Amino acid sequence: MATAVRCFLMVVVVLAPLLAGAAGGKLSTRFYDRNCPNLQSIVRSAMAQAVAAEPRMGASILRLFFHDCFVNGCDASILLDDTASFTGEKNAGPNANSVRGYEVIDAIKAQVEASCSGIVSCADIVALAARDSVNLLGGPTWTVQLGRRDALNTSQSAANSNLPGPGSSLAALITMFGNKGLSPRDMTALSGAHTVGQARCTTFRDRIYNDANINASFAALRQQTCPQPSGGEGTLAPIDAATPEKFDNYYYQNLVSKQGLFHSDQELFNGGSQDELVKKYRGNAGMFAADFAKAMGRMGSLMPSADTATEIRLDCKKVN
Ligand code: HEM
Image (cartoon, rainbow, N blue to C red):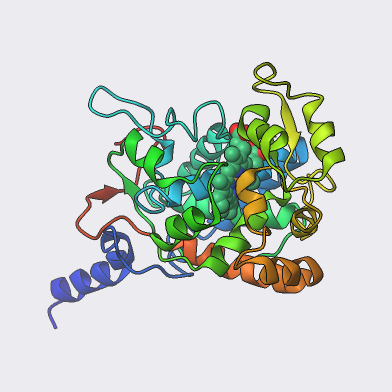
């Protein structure tokens, strides 16, 4: 074989995983082993620092990943700032004044670029950062499939229509997760993410004043800092009041004792199809951890449609 041909084939073999990553391409756990071997340790130590400085940041990054994946797949579309040609997701209803951690991802991306420029997608950085967040807060870990690509544009309306709101019924939650190929069991496990983090009064006011299936002293406690009909909209409350900075299965205990913070949380334990599973997760932390990790893998595999043009963004806030 002529040397030139052999060189060409070698280049193809080395670059294939990088070039073949059009949306819908196959993910692999070893995608960056050769071209960015320090990726995982860079993400892990940056997240360790961020979570040590503020434990809630782990929760915020986990949520950011969910909100990315549910809108056109896990393609870092949520990270794009608005431009003249599109209005992005950051200011969509579920995200504005709510999703946090953009600057943490931008800082990790800068470190990754310094180590291996133009190789790693922002979408993969978010997936790794979310996994590390869960683990740093005391939850399980798992191997992340890699090779996602970054979106070139996005739309605010897609974020508004694809993300469930806190007033959702069980049927609506099952449908919205089902639309993403996720089962009711995945949905109930993924909702266990509400074992960490904080929520604004505006997201749970209806529940603490109007729902019947709520523990009375819990409602009274939350009403103290979340008056009706208005006031304190942005005042925060822990979603899991018992262990808000620990990724454990206490969320399900809260549901059984009618202390779910959102209407949508309590819908998982309200005489419906998920009651038995909620009780299992409450009693079996290992089962919850294993199901959560599996469901995160499935959610993390949501891809933009195969004909969508993508790239490896150099700056997560804007297309190249
Ligand atoms: C089942 C449907 C879901 C609904 C209706 C929902 C709704 C919400 C709402 C309203 C907030 C509070 C936002 C704010 O006050 O600014 C929140 C926070 C949060 N959500 Fe969800 N969520 C859902 C599923 C998920 C999933 C699947 C995950 C991750 C796997 C997740 C992770 C989180 C986390 C960690 C927080 C706290 C974030 C922080 O403290 O910054 N949620 N969610």
